[in-house]
Length: 99
Image (cartoon, one colour):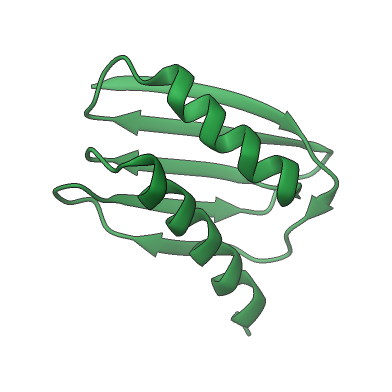
């Protein structure tokens, strides 16, 4: 297991928490929580060691497009970069539809 941490300067705070996905073979869980300030912190626990640079590339692309401010926790069990991007986008949809 590897623990990764990233921080991004962001400008769009979220107002509610969101949860998407499940931890399972080839998948991941993402939890978004509101946070104060203009920095998003991303904490990842992954079963696949040695992919920090790939995680950083995927997250940087995401935050360049969607500069949400949140505390993000990701529990990964071997998801591909495409699945990571899909789940992050799905989490935004959950935020848009939360009541």
